[in-house]
Length: 197
Image (cartoon, rainbow, N blue to C red; front, side, top):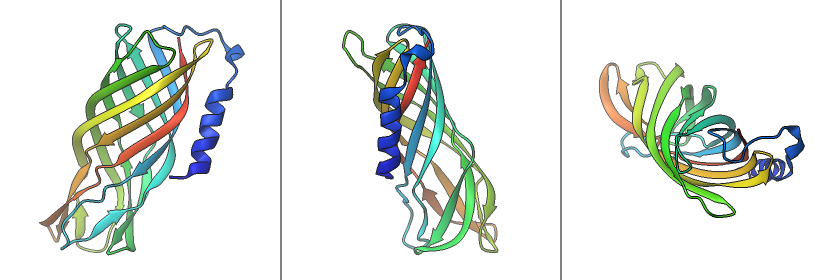
């Protein structure tokens, strides 16, 4: 991934001044801004060697804690444009919007706050620009699994590192006939800063 962006984001997280507000380290709401790297698995048959590029972009997420240990997390971003490649050559592009909702278990009683989670991803594809005759299914639903750690910095501020594995796939058709299923199935690595209140 883009190591310089990740290091900069982590540096911001570790230096965010708690004086901005007096948050609650144990409040029910947690919002984060993170820099996320999408690394696609690019799984498909050899007959149709389709792939998309890896990409680094910002994301926003919000969590609500039902108890000290149990929380729901919603990850949001704006539609991301990806190059579509065939046998390594760029042949088109598309945009995808991949909101992900997870239930998480947060471990307590430590100086840091690790967590694990599982949930559901719903991806919408738009602005599809492919060679004539090629089309894709416009949505995907799949499982999402993740783990991470929040590092309290005082005043409600936290640094965060997170990794997720998400199932995203779409059918590829040629002149209306399905010819393959393309599995993006990305690994998502992110770092950032959060505020709990």
